[in-house]
Length: 365
Ligand code: NAD
Ligand code: GLY
Image (cartoon, rainbow, N blue to C red; front, side):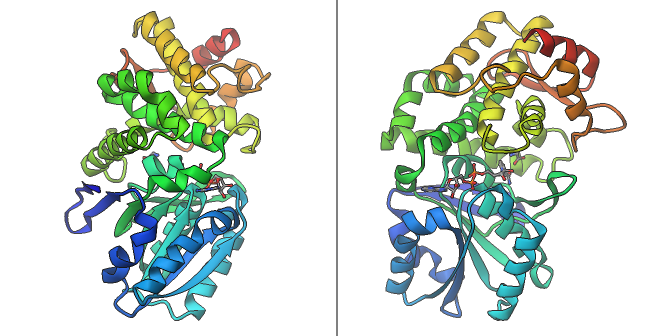
């Protein structure tokens, strides 16, 4: 078992990483359930594959679990589901001091976290992430949200969990495509500021994806330690430090918008292509060595991830994609802060990127 702290003063919390943690969750969650009850929210896929392990463990610890099972998929991060969920939590008598438990991927974590942020002006919650993406990214840091008609994640709040409990064995039932999509976010941490980790991934990424437990634990620990550090430095993305976590996301967001935020391109797949494009664009501007851009692209491609517009199934031209970027929620006063790089592990926030230049670049990408 290892544990990483997210250092946020009185809102600090632990990320516990333990093989088999789900089967021992009862002991770990007991201090968060003084009334001897917990509400667990999950989705149908996770209910079919992992939920019973958690409920059996809660039962062993004399914690009464009430389970709410939602439909899987991005559509669940909606006003309608939020209203149904909060009504059910209220009808169950959930109190401010209670903890509700999110057992699932980023969809369940984001929705449950937002419900916790607003229920009775804020109750507590615990993240038990079951996708690689959620384990290394979305369960940590307190960004919670639902989607609105105007776009993805546009309604939400910063609300930190009380505990993140990560059991790598849950990844055994995750579809391989979802595993690869989550792996893109692991690679991201190497590219932001940890060239040694990227080099380790070049040697061990295949083992992570193939289910090697030691490799998975090292990848998860390194990723959450990086995220905890960055969130501790800039919890609400005010200084630009936390913005580094968005490497590849501006290009990626345009690709997701172009594919209608659908299963045609998963979020992690869009981030992979976006990171490869950010490196290629940085190399084109001679900010970063071409060899680094090639290494990134090679590694992502070998990991089964898209690295170009055609890999991502995009036929739209640069101007169409740049138009999606103009609607990005990160736009400030008509300028879009853009993450570029001076090389592997040397990501920086550029504020001088001209979207017309990006459009020309994308036409040749
Ligand atoms: P997801 O929650 O939709 O899970 C992907 C699929 O895997 C779903 O079908 C789910 O039912 C299934 N699944 C989950 N765990 C499983 C398991 N162990 N075994 C079998 N099937 C399993 O998707 P995701 O990729 O985890 O998360 C994407 C969401 O996360 C997006 O909404 C995105 O906006 C959000 N996100 C949030 C943050 C943040 O900081 N809050 C960061 C990145 C992404
Ligand atoms: N996933 C980006 C962030 O948490 O800031």
